[in-house]
Length: 479
Image 1 (cartoon, helix red, strand yellow):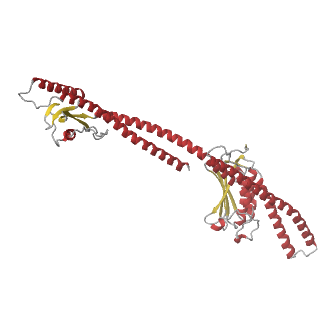
Image 2 (spheres, helix red, strand yellow; image 1 turned 90 degrees about the horizontal axis):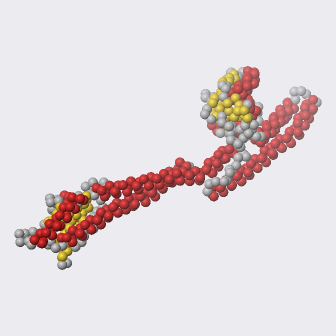
């Protein structure tokens, strides 16, 4: 869930930062250009004041005063171009230069670099100053800013002052401003990612705790509860509701266990008395009486079912005494204990049990392995093999029991381990249908698992999983 929520938050925050960054970058570029334009407007106004009284073309009859004004204007323009590198000129209405710098700069329509200057000149002739030139961006290496102002005398435009400015410094300042914006955006993005990590962690921490607690309850640790101490109010309410549900489920299961245990115990005594009376009755009848034999068999079977029910209730109720156990050694002991019975039935019982450890209740694990091996021997015909293998993975030690019996279908595999369930094909085999259920309950109390699948070419494969790491929150000892 975090993998989906975190990218979404990051994308949203990146979108917000970009939405703010682009207008800010445009504003910085516009401000830099506007500053240059304002400076050029002041410069053209000063030159227009100097050129206001130089209104005639140069000729041999021109008075000395007017020549001096033109010379003064030319000197100003030459100095201006030398210091700032800006082309500047004052041009009569017919584009003839009154004064200009550099000396080879003229206004010629459509002549490349001066096309913008010519357009600005035409605007100024109509008494409209070109104070809003097109925006020049940092990547416009050949971009220039042209500003033109009219020279007005007696209400008429008699000439036009034109400046053509390079934009290198302006573009460098704009780029520097953009770099600062980018650095600020990057820092803000890092802060946003950190905030998103904290936010998602805060929101999802109760979900992770709830998931872990759900897993604990599903694996048999019914006392697990969620600490409703963090996260949004909705998740805290969910944690409290979950705890209430878990309490109710535990109460119901406890009532069910108590009922099964009490019923098994209460029925065991009358059944024992009934079996005793059947034995007394059998003494007065012929020894080969089939009805008495059938009643005796069914009575013993019922007694076994009650004993198994009582064992199942105790297995589900008892807490596991987990210890660091040598699973290989324990499995080898159980194989050795069952080998005489296997030999009696003509079945080969083989064990491959290297030393490996896991956290388990040794008594519960022994009982579970006994039930699994007993079940395998029941259904394995003479001459076949039952094999027990112990292996260690990263987090789990497994005990795999395979047999050479008829195996189970897919539908039967989905039901194996259910209480009282037995395959219709195996109804004649002695048993109550509770052995594997008891084994699973014994393992679940300590965090173990039991899985079933087909064993090729035929038979059943039972995998018992034992955790190699110590479960949290339980009293543990080392064997």
